[in-house]
Length: 498
Ligand code: TNX
Image (cartoon, rainbow, N blue to C red):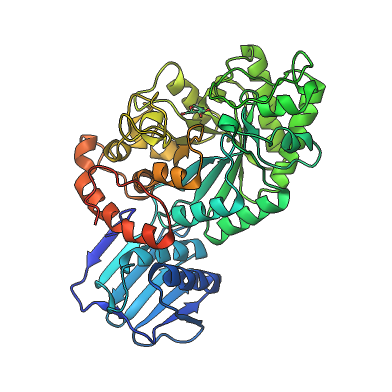
């Protein structure tokens, strides 16, 4: 009963595993120690059991984490793992620490979190599991409403449980600039001083940001930083008059309109600005990706837009990072080879979204699917919800967040061209981390399962290949884990919540 559903899970029918008081976590192989210590901390949170982590041969009733080249499901070294549970003990095998960590998340879900006093048991199972896509992402918009380091850490803990492996941070927008750039200090001093609806604002210092990246990395999550350009830039424009076409800094903006701002394009000052921002951000980023936005540039003339994003993407590539952009960037010929596109149109593509998205594949890149009508987590669950937007074809309930497939959206775009899926949370209407989590959970569970679990047979109707009732019954079992973690979630309709 695991989310995302494992590729292969058999109940062996043997006697169950019982977590006895003397049980230990046995670690072997490179990186197993750190994974073992995280399991120890997670079991302490989930069910208040304190286990020792030791390098010794496993005994009866122990939990072993073994990392070695020949461990894990063959052909899936990156994040694959095997997990066997029986009365003898639990054994997680993986070729990498990332795989072992994913296996640990499965084990956490198999161990009941409601566990005061009674013996904790796990049904005897044999699991061989690995992801369908390399990229399963969540996006947090920290620009509209700012979320401090502690909030992002608890969010990372919550997404890790679902085997999400990328956190995309939308760091800049009209309403705020949230990342310290030493060579342009006014960006955070002025541009970081407020947020949507006049909220207090804030920003990450370079050290804060490093701390977040390190915390994510321990959980085998890659942070994908986004600085959105050339539109969505009012906070930067308000900080530096010279970035504006008319040389005049506009007032700070706290409303919810999009598409009104643009950096001054074709200008050496702006070019230096982009170069500096990209250089400093790349230096803070161990991961391969740097996202430069490029969406909704309704105030930038088309030719200028194309010249700008090509140049910005080149500057990213020069730092050794792979540029990522929203699908509109696909209008631009000559992007650096391998540039990644992020699709945010609908399940049925509108306007030129399909064409623009395919352009990334023609350029040797891959695509991340975030269709707004099913994967945008700021869209309301139900009509009348006090928080959320409703522009993406009405509400997105848990069922609609689940009943779609990324390989059935843009004709010609199949699994081989897809890097994966991502669920963005825009925060114009989302003031606190608890509110954010209620928008994200449980719907992120649906997106995480779509990204992880095996592809459905491509002949069948999507509603028949995604068994919503089965999914909902597994989601219901996450509730006790979210309660133990202190993660807020919505008691969404259609789930048999305990
Ligand atoms: C569109 S989709 C946006 C965001 C908004 C969001 C609100 C995209 C790339 N941009 O700027 O916050 O809609 O749902």
